Length: 179
Image (spheres, rainbow, N blue to C red):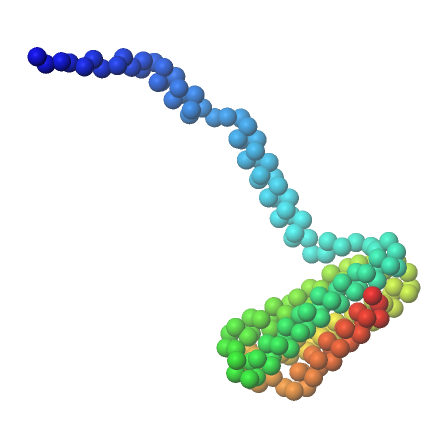
């Protein structure tokens, strides 16, 4: 005797109803996606502002911004000096050394530009800004000379190496004096 197992009854209408619910759009997802897009646009818009710094309200705040700028510039000057020595010693390929030197030069220029956008609160702060700007201008010039020499496949002149070391010392003295 052969037994025939009965197949379970399947409710086709219930399956159709469940699949329709699964494929309907949920309004919460659209709102979240829209908010994410708005947040992304806001972040891009605020990061593309060339100088997001305004006036410093007090001499102390301005001095703190100057010291922070000097510390960042010191790091970039040391990077430029390191890649220059490494390149001169044959320890770095020209294209790589050129990129590093270019990035360091751009960073010093960007730091100077951002610092220049801060409005000094008083005449004493003007003097502080002039002092730091003179150091940053020299550092940018020496970093530029290093980048140009590397991209021309020439060795870096000892004058520029000594100039970067002198810039680093002046930045370090500035930091010590105003911290």
